Image 1 (cartoon, rainbow, N blue to C red):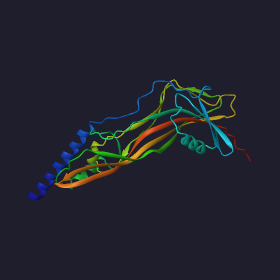
Image 2: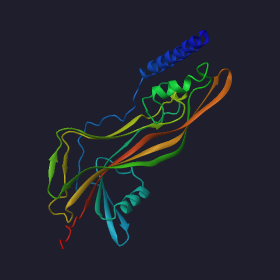
Image 3: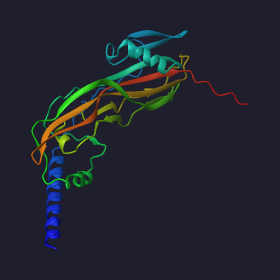
Image 4: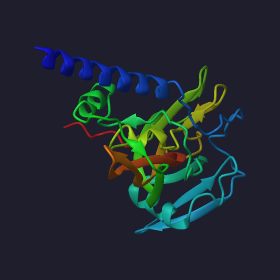
Length: 265
């Protein structure tokens, strides 16, 4: 009976320590986001620099607005052209970045795939002492600017205009897996936000255009790699590692195309 009470006391002590450790660390959350741009972007401009991309037998015009010229590679322009083969014109509206953080001991508020506080506690009660870390958390980026997501924002018919009464924001968050205690010092680019500011006039193709529809989209990219950390459990050397993905870049663009009504049979 005394042995059972002693084991119960040890169990509750470990749970209390682990729970407190998580609570203390979660209070030190920082978020690194791309700074909000206060300027209102242009959706269309006849003065914008333009390039022409050949796609099969057709030619696609790509215009660079709001200072985006030179921020997208020619290879990416070709990818966009083949991704939207029915497009007549593409306007690049905005390009945003987050810089890398290679080593930082501060905790980041990242999306955790398998690391709820409950899971952390249940995994930890099987050891007689908490890990003692002998190194910081090291990041190794294996792949840069990997396509992460391509999101639809809105679409407008020819001649249609709409002045935004509120900001439109779309975002991509970081993710990481592996031991939740070991990665508490992992510093990731937490969140990348693409923002279309209040007051921006969203509109469809002009009346003199052959196109009758404009679609606004945002493409997100991320860096992918592994994190590593070394420590001791009960005096035994232990190696911790996991995978991570952190946002790195977005491209905001508009696609003009000709939408033909379906023929009714």
